[in-house]
Length: 354
Image (cartoon, rainbow, N blue to C red; front, side, top):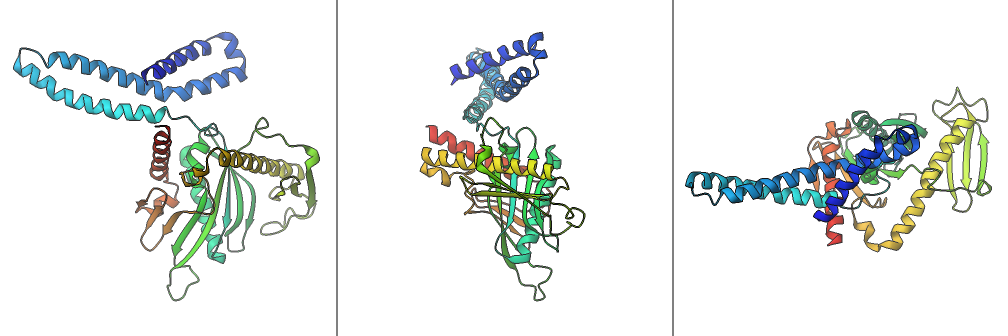
C-alpha cells in the first residue's frame, strides 16, 4: 500500500510544480484539468502524511518504552497503545481512499422525479422531494435549474427534471436513485388514516459532448404549443419541444421556457444524460450481474427509502439506517445519510477487491 501512496504523493508534488508554470497558467483548459486532478489527490495525500507522522511517533515511542527510567517507559507504553490504535484507523481510512473513484463523481447531475402509486398524494410527495433536493443544493453550494416539469393544480409533481451543478454533485446524489415511499395522513383524509404512496427518483450524470455522440439524423424534433399549469404566458406560440431519439425510442419533452431554442437546448441535455445512463447501465450489466445488489446501483424498481411522518423518521433500507429527524431531512439536512451511504459503498468496493 505504501508504494502506491508514495507514487500518489509524488504525482501530487509534480502537479504542484506544473500548476506554477506560466505556460500552464495561460492554458485555461490544461490548467483546469491539472487543478482538478491535484484537488482530487489532496485528501489522500493529507491523510498519508498523518499516517507517516503517526508511524514516526510510534517508532520513537517504542525506543522510549525500553528506557531504563520506569516512569518514562510507562508513559511511552501508554501513548503507544493510543498511537497503534490510530495507526489501524488511518490504515483503514487510506484503504477506503484508495478505492477506485467513479469517473462520473465530479459531474453535474440530471435528477428526475416522477409520481408513482398514490395519485395526488404521490404527486404532493414528489413536490416534497423537489423542495428537499433544492434545499440540499442550497446547503451544499450546488446550482440548481429546472429543465422540465409537469405540475398538478394542487402543486404536486407528476414529472420534474432538474440539473444540479457543482463539483462532486453526482458523487453525493447518485445514491438517491430508486423508489422513495412516504407514509402519512393526507390533508384530504377525514378519517385520519395513514396512506402509503411513492415517487421514483432517477439520478443521471450529465453527459458531455465527449461522452455521447448523437447523430442528428437519428432525431425527430416536433414543436407544439405549451400547455398545463402556468402555461398561459407561453402557449401563444409553438415553443414546446419534443425530441425523439429513434434508435433507442427515448422521448424527451420540454415546455418550461418561452423560447423554442431554450426548450430544445434543455431537452437535448436530458436526452444526452439518458442515453449516457443507458450505455453505462449496459456496460455495468456486462461487467457484473451482481451490480444490482450494490448500494448506488440505481435500480429504480427497488424501494430504497421510507419517509414515515407519524413517527418522524426516515429509513434507508439499503443500509438499515433510521434517522429520527424527518423534518430536518426534508429541509435538505441529508449529509448524515449520504455520508453513511458513501462509506457503505466504499466498504463494499474494498471487500470486492480482497
